[in-house]
Picture: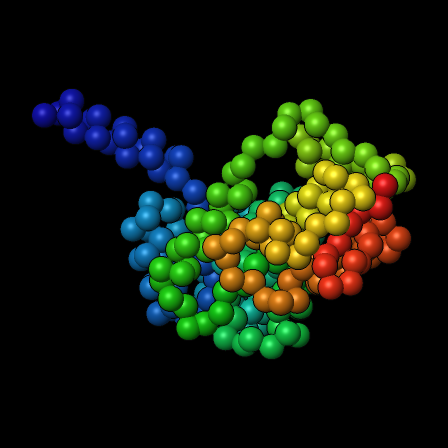
Length: 241
């Protein structure tokens, strides 16, 4: 019996070590408890914070795989938290998604400008929330070809090291901007339709706003230059070789 108990304990420790960590940040404790309960049922390790300052402390101490941030919080709001995290090298590629009760474009754009990967609207439906979390983390865990480098029109992307260079200078790109650039550069000159981009970058199971691609393209152009990504009106985008 003692050996069986020890084996179960070891198995539990191993499972916990392999489990993905999610940090929930919201000033409403009932929402935290609802989402925490449903995530833990799915095997996630869940960390929580009730304000922005504590969120940054917990994130630095625990290095979560996914951070879920409420936008509207007293003191430091979610956008500012995201901005600060994205300035830290260790959170350059961490998946960050916002919770927001507002559906206006400016709220979504503010989140994407801060470096968010996605957003989830309140009231939160647990099944939809879990589906989004799994989809985001699944795409994060996809392996990239080792040693592969994409290079075109003065831009170099090192897939293995997840680094981007323009004119020899390293650029800091949030995860979704990096993935979007990789997709466009994978076939220079090819026109990627909007639906294809949504499917490749955000996954068909995710619900994203109509402005999502436009915002990410705009942010990419600010960093790599307007001339490299062309808009094909009514169809999509291409990377000029």
